[in-house]
Length: 368
Ligand code: GLU
Image 1 (cartoon, rainbow, N blue to C red):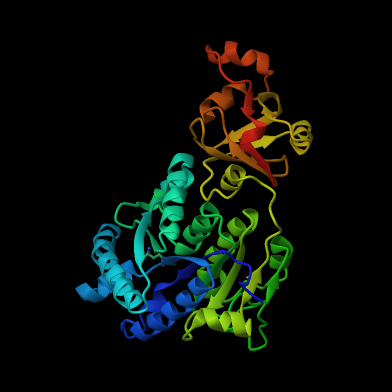
Image 2 (cartoon, helix red, strand yellow):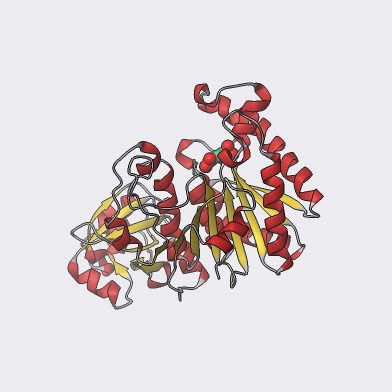
């Protein structure tokens, strides 16, 4: 049975579930949802909620139209709406004897190791205290380059950080279809995805935006992060009442099954970064060495792309631009452009200072 063995479950709620097309807040739905959460809790399953809706609720309060908002104004509206959102959760969840807490995250909080560990500990403590963390992006300070912008990927990173077993993305579609269900009557719901890259090739993404590049895209990106970090993911329709109960009973959703990952927590964090800062193109010799668990040396690097600092996440690609690994660089991009192709012994002389001999140490790298 779905969710039966999940000890930690992250559930993401989209704005369209909290606010209907007439801009009415769906309090009854939230109350039914709270019952679902309580049911999970009574089975000793821990729940974390990632909820959108700050901007939508801020717009209702201010009588604004979301479409006409400029970035800085929308940040102010998010600040107004976030408190509305938490009041809504608090009021309704308390009726079901559920205590909630608020966690606001930015991209940097999950991408920087120390900050992500701090967040992890806070999540753990809250769950231990029996509280339900309700997470949103800190829209009030996140600007475009340091912003998730969608709660699907944020939720997948929260699932990875908290070592969750399942992430449920509740949206307004039943799941992933083989073609756009709004255009093609014979579109079929894909119930199980076991090999994401292979299965994606059989999907016709053409059609309207909503299906192709909008909503579904960030959900697939979220699935990639989850699967790499050993967490299953479900896309399901949340518009019904008691959506979680319906998932368990009807199984009318898409389940992305993760192969149990043997990676340790730090490596899972490395592999599921949402914002690698650069790319290193490596030669065949280095590719072979990496496959044998060796570190990446300057001699095997052909090209460097992007501007990054020491310690930043980078992608490692082979000559045909296939991603073969990810890691934390021990050198900044401008240093790498000077030392690439050179023997490690020459690095000190080229840079004029003593440094590490590996560009990415094997402990800081994960093969894909
Ligand atoms: N953080 C945004 C909000 O609360 C929503 C982002 C999203 O919908 O994915 O309004």
